[in-house]
Length: 128
Image 1 (spheres, rainbow, N blue to C red):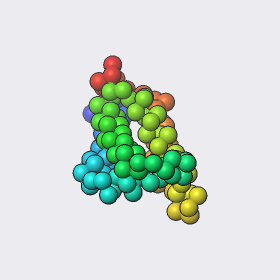
Image 2 (cartoon, rainbow, N blue to C red; image 1 turned 45 degrees about the vertical axis):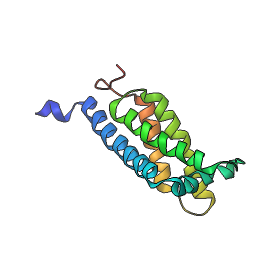
Image 3 (cartoon, rainbow, N blue to C red; image 1 turned 135 degrees about the vertical axis):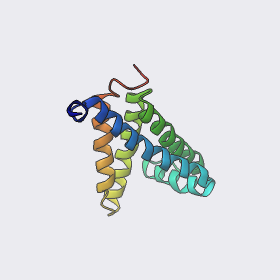
């Protein structure tokens, strides 16, 4: 039993389950919400100078959150999904901060996903 509490690989699995599950939940809810939600989500890219087809951008963001969550959970294409999620979360944190929303939660998410990017999926990931 003492060995169980010292197994870093199980800690990574636990972290992957929690973070991946959260992204799956967010992505699935956003996808199921439909075009009105996609347009709101996709509207954030106007801050990057992209003002066309917000529904498409929102759908892409929701799909990437869902797919990234599955990738994190299973440890499949782990680092590419971590990188994609970290870029998107960094943008979200910046926009929250810029518009006075604080963005502390987004910064924490960036740090967690970036930490996972550096550690990798661990021994129990499908990518091995």
